[in-house]
Length: 297
Image 1: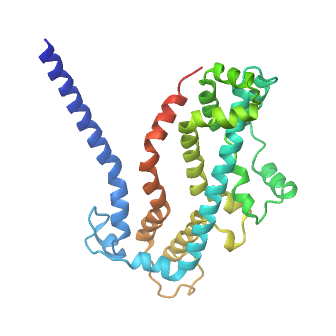
Image 2: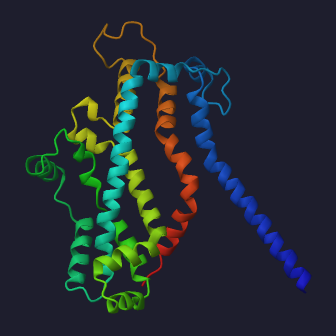
Image 3: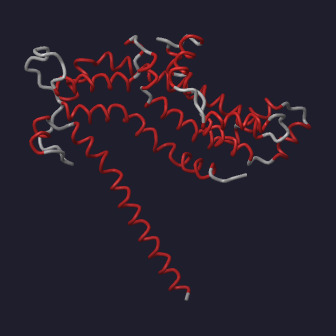
């Protein structure tokens, strides 16, 4: 009986591993195809379509991107890294403080604060009032803060962190209060150290949001020195598509032939590269954080 059960467990594990392996290959295939196409020649892509292995390996696309705009891309990388780091740290600080506050059941108006936060998810003033307030009252036009402030707080992330803080035993807080600690001390020395997984999970979400953001740059930024990476590469891709499709004025492009297809893939590789290298190191915290955040009080 015991032997049959062990064989059954091994069979289930084998099937599960095979399924997970196949699913991983399915998920990996688009990434490998993107990388392959980015190192292919434009003529080969037009002639034979996409291939998992470059039939005619070429660096022409990357040469076109970096030779023509190398320093500007590096500058936009710097802007994106600065915005991602400062924005993520600021967002984590604000989000964790609000989440900790409403996790305290003795807090007055706790439910009102939660209701107002929920209300902002359901109802919005719209794009034009948001833009007018941001520009006229906060002066975010052509400011690096325009890439940080609009995304500095997420209600969904706040409630995820609140679930973490609420799961901490109230007896720890009560013991700290008896020792003379105020709530800020409890937040710094007890709540945050016990919520590292939540901080990493929410921090990754904020970092991905800041890293991939180009919308705020489109709305607020005209100064090319403040263009983040995503928006700068978006402009390159738009220019390439415009020239390749003939939408520019007659004679302006001459006989220029640009790598329209491969440049899309190269831009994707350039933008997602750092995130791909970072994600494996924090994946376990991210998965654990999402699972724990799904547990209700």
